[in-house]
Amino acid sequence: MKPLDELINNQDSAWPLIQNWLSKARNKVEVLPVNKEQAETVLCDLQVTTRSSLGTVAYHTGGILFDNGWLRFLGSGHNLLPRNLSTWNQFDTQRKARKLDGGLLIADDVVGGFFALNRGLFEGKIGDVFYLAPDTLEWEWLEMGYSEFLYWACTGKLEQFYETFRWNRWEEGVKKTNGNHGIQIYPHIWTRGEEVINPARSIVPIEELWNLNMMYREKFGCCSY
Image (tube, rainbow, N blue to C red; front, side, top):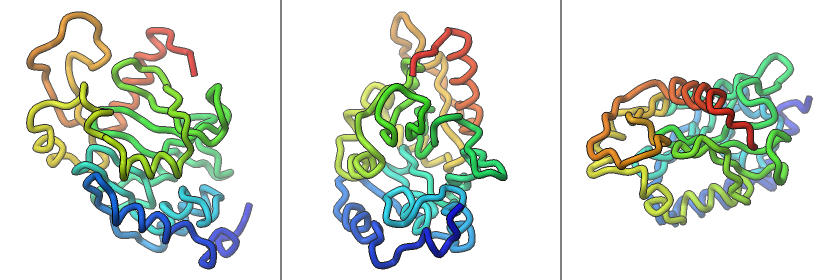
């Protein structure tokens, strides 16, 4: 395991580049302040350097919120996003992520879509991002790495990506949540059949949305990665 001083690279950090992306973002963005002690712990758990985009987001931010908090990038934790990359992935004493064996959860959206880096779990490039889509309950290969994914969050058409998941005045619902919560839609987004005109929406812990996704994936025999 590398010590902290080998993980922090001030001369060749990715942070200035990411700051530039964030300052010119097309989408609304909020960078959450960092707690240095928490950031150091998370960086040690990840065992990546601040030369990488993942390492620099973990070390320099408490997390990053896009589109009024619809899309949340995990960092080292903040009151508005209490989870961090270490606690959410459930790192054990050997710094192995237990929540998604062979993957690393890095971001999620308010309606229960989850983004993970491939660490051997998925059939696809190691280090690329996969999306657990709430309308299919399948892991979809986005064919881009963490840096590209972050750049897309800054400049991409989020409204188009999430067009079928959003409702009129969705911003009001998202404002009532924090990063530990999500919005459960019922009937579930993945439900087949006729379109539901007025689905019920309720604020629930994001852990509950994750567990529901995992439960229904198992129930339906979703095994494709």
